[in-house]
Amino acid sequence: MQTGKTVMKSFSRPLRFVFATLTLVAGVSAARADCGPEALGVSRTLTISRTKATAVGLQTYPRTLDLAVHEVVLTFDDGPAASTPKVLDALAKECAKATFFIIGHNAEAMPHLVKRTAAEGHAIGHHSWSHPDHTLRLMDEAKAKADIEKGIVATTKAAGGESAPFFRFPGFADTPALVADLNARGYTVFGSDVWASDWKEMTPKAELDLILSRLDKIGRGIVLFHDNKAQTAGMLGEFLRELKKRGYRLVHLVPGDGETPVVAAGPEWTSTTEPIIAKTLAPKKPAVKKPATEKPAVSGEHAPPAVESE
Ligand SMILES: [Zn+2]
Image 1 (cartoon, helix red, strand yellow):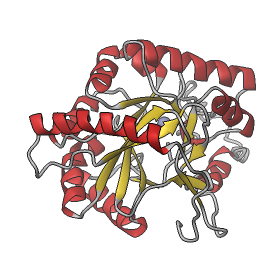
Image 2 (spheres, rainbow, N blue to C red):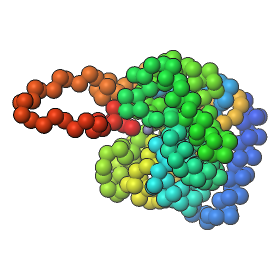
Image 3 (cartoon, rainbow, N blue to C red):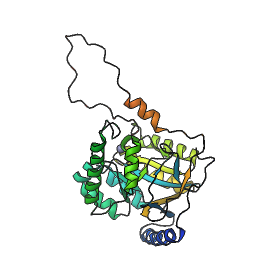
C-alpha cells in the first residue's frame, strides 16, 4: 500500500526539532522514572501542523504520516469507557503514548478518565459528540458541524481546558465539506493505516494475532483500536511487549507549527473504508411483508452501527 510513495511536503525542521527534542526529553525522563530499558517507550514525537491541517491514513485518504519502517502511531477511539483505565495502565507500564479520539458525551459522563488520559501525556483528539449511527455524512451539514463542535467543547472541558486539533470521523464517514471545514480550523483529520477489527467479538489472543499479522504486512502506520472494548484492553499489554520484541518503535503525535510530514499513496491506492461505508449506508431492502398475526418489531431497538468498522 505504501509503495511508490513520495514525500509531499517539507516542514520547518528547526522548529520541529526544538519542539520534538523538548517533548522527547520529557518523555525520556518519564521513561527513566517508571520504565526499565525493556519498556517500549516513545522513540520520537511527530508534529501535526495546526496551521496547515490535512487528512491522513491510507485506509481513507491517499496520504499518510511519513513514518519510517517499523514506526507505529497508536490511536484509540470511542472512549472513555469502563475499559479505558486498563488501557491506560497497559500504556503506562510501557511508557507508551497514544492518541485518543474521544466521544464528547462519554467525556462529559466520565471526565475523570479524560483528565487522567491527558495527565498521562496522551493526545486528546475528537470523535464527535454523539457518534451518530447514521453518521455525520448523512446528517444535515449544520447539524453535523454542531455535533462536531459540541464534542470538541465537551472533551476539551473534561480534559481540563486543552485538547489536540485532531479529529476522526465516526465510521470514517466524512464529507469533503466537513473535512475542509475542520482543516480550515486547524484540525487534522485522521483515518488509519491498519486496524484491529476490534468491533468484532474475538478473544484478546485472536485480536493480538490479527493486528500483529496485519501490522507485520505493512510494517508501519497509524494503528486503530477502541479503548471501549474489553478484548482490546485485555491484549494491549502483550501487544506493546510484542512491538518491542519485533523491533517496532512508537511515534507520539503532538500539535505544532510547520508542516505535517506526509507521504502520498502510490497510483494503485484505493479507499478501504468507502466500500464499507457504501455497503452499510445503502438503503435497506424493504422488509418482507409479515403475516398480520405476527407481533410488530420492537420499537426503539437499535440497529447495528451504520458503519461496521466503527
Ligand atoms: Zn468510533
